[in-house]
Image (cartoon, rainbow, N blue to C red; front, side, top):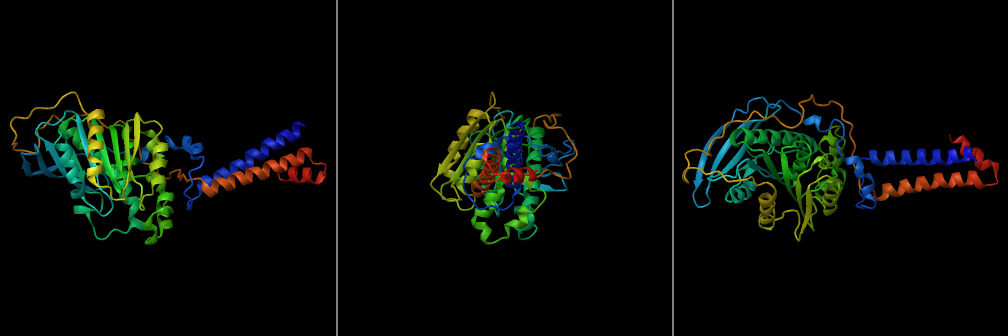
Length: 398
């Protein structure tokens, strides 16, 4: 009896384990089912090597170049163009919007979507600055002033995502050095929201995340998105670094306040992807998912007040700094640079990631259950069947 019981347990473990392993290793799936998705959520937090991949030398100089462009007396802020050094030899271009009376110790980083530039997020940055939040609106890699010609999404997607995360970290260094920022919010839209979700799980200085038209599970997104009609998504999915840009591999590390916005008719990042990201954010201080009766392009006016309320409640420092006068000669009052380094240890990037793409279960989970059922049926036949053939067949399988 013990022999057969052992056979039952071994069959369940082997069949279930193999089927489950195959399920998790898939890179092609078109099912949108989320049934029993929570079973695998425990796999989403703190993957070895994923955070360390984005380590860098925070002591390298920023070589900031700041030029005042305009003074908005009615809005109460200065608009400046800024350039600074990131990693990998990249130079970031951005708008810096600094209130006359900035809230102390905080800053907001804004990330635009695919094909956009820093001008797309400037209206939101100015809106937040009018409420005393210092803002930095970036050009993503290969966008805006950093463009190097047309973007080839098949070959550029992973590179853009990785570099954007490094750029966000260096942006935080800039806000620390220039304004003594201790708590930072990341506001991202579309492509910027995907990179923003990764950034939330990488840098502990980020305490607030507001992601617009967002989601997780790149395999699902790329297959289900309308953009799959124009590109070969499998070229992206075959990139060995894909695990380093999968939002689901990082969002579980984030312990701040998270606000997600999605369009109910979004065909670029379908709504189930937002649900997956929300479900995976298991360690957040608070999280909310907000639906909009739109497609992918959710208007700023539908999100600005929600995000502003989030910044006020979760990011606001103890006071607002008082600048002398309203028309300042420079972008902002200078604060003594801090010597504080990022919260994460500066480690050498991992060369061989343990890439795991998390999938919606759908048909794959059905196959898993089918394989498990077959294994159990064979065990039952071996235990209770009178034919010695079934027993021999079961034993031979081991």
